[in-house]
Length: 264
Image (cartoon, rainbow, N blue to C red; front, side, top):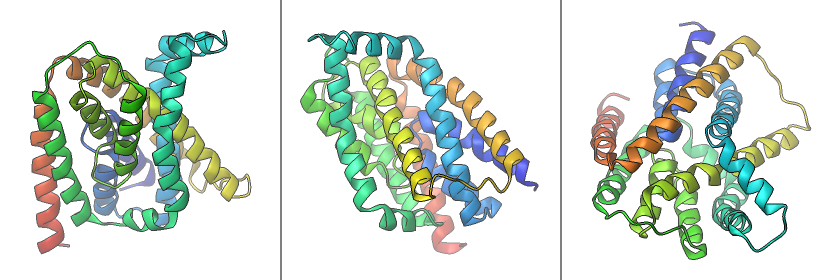
């Protein structure tokens, strides 16, 4: 299979699974293992695809983001200021894990299909219990933001859905489902851009694009599928339809475990 088609397929997987609670990292690991993607090219593609899904989030929530920015720069004790404060708090756990454990984490993203399968089962459990929780009108508090941030840090492990973990944690804390989804999707944007900036700095300010057409194709695929998946996920969370994804994660996780034990 050619590089461009591989990149498009992986881009679609990234765009869909970044927002749907089925673990983008886990599915990317599985897809790259099947396609036999080179490790160095894989890291570059990962950066590009995460940038694409971050931009798709910005597009979907552009009005909310503009209102938050405008309200924040009024420099008043308003909802926007508090929301930014909660976002900053939620970022701390994942930022610390990413900074201090980067080398260890990279080893986990190297064909660890058994780990991916086990973590997908954990994601399934989280989604099942979150779907059974009662809906409320409660907003995300500062305390909730810290706990959700810890969930996001744990979700760095391949196979644990970031959106699934953060939304489920928020809902289990008693937060409104729509507000939980909004907070979950917006809280990751600064982290993604920060991680990309760090990669650029680590590379001396220059990134080598060894296969530009493939990266561009993957970017476009991830961006378009990301917009579709983000809007779809918002609707699904409101309707309490997460159990379907719990079943999906259970099936895929089981297949991944069986594959790693008997066929890898």
